[in-house]
Image (cartoon, rainbow, N blue to C red; front, side, top):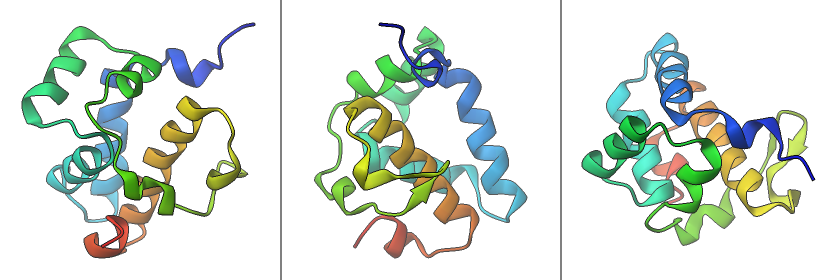
Length: 116
């Protein structure tokens, strides 16, 4: 079975797009990084290693140190799909990141985004 295209996209190419989306709405790269660190458990050094290695999205999430247990609290629609109903684990994690960056761009507070 062929993998979904989203799996094979390079995180190094997606990352600047996430930052640009947030910055267009007055948010910062540091806030994007905070969201990524919260969701995946990466730190600045390990995130940079993933970028330098050219990890695809599937590898990026499979090698994540620790997906935040509160990620299950992320709910809503992204790209026409309810995140909480996506059965494929890797695709759900990819959509979690999409949803969090959308929330950041829409001006939600970091407490709300990080499910505190």
